[in-house]
Length: 201
Image 1 (cartoon, rainbow, N blue to C red):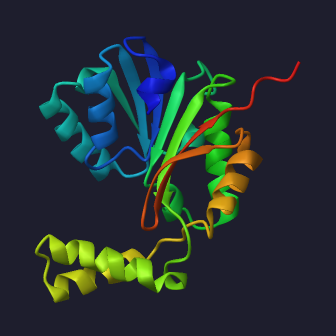
Image 2: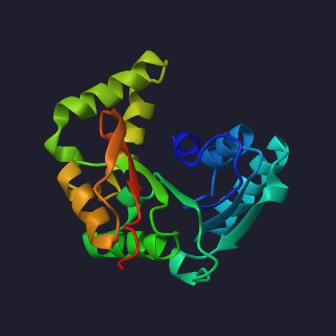
């Protein structure tokens, strides 16, 4: 989606928030767009180290600057052409922190530039049917009952997703983004495209 917004084959400097672990979004983006460079920020050094291994294996590590820390630790300039924030929002503890992080992203984007934000929304306990569907998806892939229960228990620990899509919209708007467009949804997961509000005249 980000490539479709920015245009194929163009250079871009992309901020990636919560980039540790698999680095899947960076690898996919870098493979598709050879002229993009990335600044990847994550508070966990072990997760960044794992991401670095995966990026090196993919041959794109030289296009990525990894920063241990949070968005507010990054320089305010130069501004980025785009940002990715995948699987982060529902791990932030409350709406105040969520909006602060999103506002920090907005401040570091050029006016009108896109953010792709994706993550879980809706309170898990409020949607037992979706939880059952989630469980069945693992069961279809051969996961046993005990492992499914362990996965479910892990999901319910330490996650605080926005309560609704309207809540996601409000967080983005309050942080300085225009109304987003949802382009993907599956069970609790949603993905949206939002643009930083243009500079006021």
